[in-house]
Length: 459
Ligand code: FAD
Ligand code: NAD
Image (cartoon, rainbow, N blue to C red; front, side):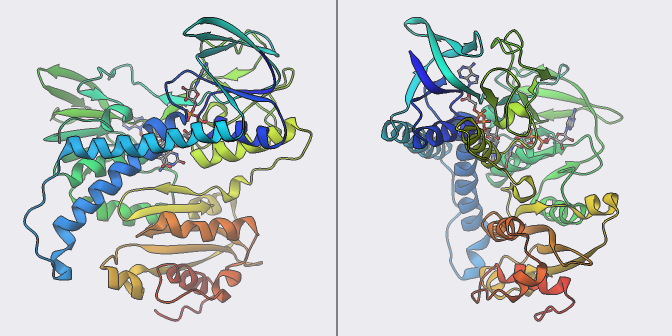
């Protein structure tokens, strides 16, 4: 089998690269070992987590928010098996969707585990035996896997990774989450909303380290009010299984008894055992090294997505996939990393793009800040969702937008405006003078931009 371009890995980076390659006229194949296309994101990441977050957010609204709207309901009950069945159906619709796009674009899916045998050949272990696949161009998009702590190894039953936490058969009495990052808070939210006691153990002084500190402080306060027990600067030293319980030991404190322990301390590039180094590809701590064209320096082999490091986000992987294929086709590809938004799908949500205030301070940049609370936004009041704020950071001299951070309802949808503004190198004034429909949540973005100019209207 010979192709113009072969992608190794069918996640959001890989499948988007394959589709772009087919659009550019390449005879394209994608090698994926799992039974469905879509990668971590579609099978065990973004999509199933958001399906569970939507189910449990609805549950939470019925339980805690309907009364204020004058709606009386009896105590709602969650059928966990049905919730999972719905999530599985959502995942299937998406994996089937990718398979449909492959057929539509005449991309061949070669199911099996691929190993790079040379710069032009991938050997695929398929159900029918070893198949050599030859390609003029190769895109490595092998993704990432959860980091395992040596002293807290996954047992697949009670000490689990994110995939385990997406499929718990019951609502835990006590879920201990090791790692107060995005997975810990999202999946912790799912089970907390259903009634689990959730304790988050974070090694650093704050949850979500690296995000804008003021936004994180605001979110931390709300998460605690929701019932999360958050313990920062906390070192876990091990865990002992006692029947159906796990005793988690923590430095300087009493051990914590948990029904389940979710270990969510980050992900690492998945690149071992695929012949990469043998083929001359440079890896650093497992991360594939590429130049600004996503080229590995070997033949016509490119690499993208979680496997090349940087922020592990599906949309980042997709853009890199597109750019790498465009370079392979002799065109120009480009990813504007300053405009890659980052979202934490808790409720309220956290979304940001560009620099944090701490980063601007560290760089010695002179900046202005504009803030606007959702408590002063008409739509947020109508929704009864007044927690949170928008924060705009603009260059003091030029007014150029440097960063925009939101903690609030549907921040995930609102951040698109900020990403567009970053892409267009807009000023805070550009956002401030743009007419925003009333009454809408994004008016808070406009007001925060007005704030950076010292002229918010509604506060
Ligand atoms: P992956 O999606 O990891 O895909 C790589 C694929 O390659 C896999 O399917 C793998 O089976 C296959 N593969 C690897 N090696 C081989 C081989 N040798 N042979 C054959 N096949 C191979 N990101 C967001 O942007 N938004 C979110 O809301 C979000 N939520 C997440 C929630 C969870 C619980 C998790 C775990 C992750 C989440 N992410 C989210 C991160 C996102 O899933 C990843 O950043 C994204 O999937 C990376 O895409 P990728 O194509 O680089 O790799
Ligand atoms: P993360 O990097 O977001 O968070 C890991 C947290 O664990 C950090 O706060 C870190 O300080 C802490 N930590 C590390 N070692 C620890 C230890 N020994 N004890 C206690 N805490 C420790 O990683 P994650 O939550 O595992 O998620 C992995 C990646 O998946 C994310 O970085 C993100 O790129 C991606 N993801 C994205 C989304 C999204 O976009 N909404 C959702 C889920 C996952």
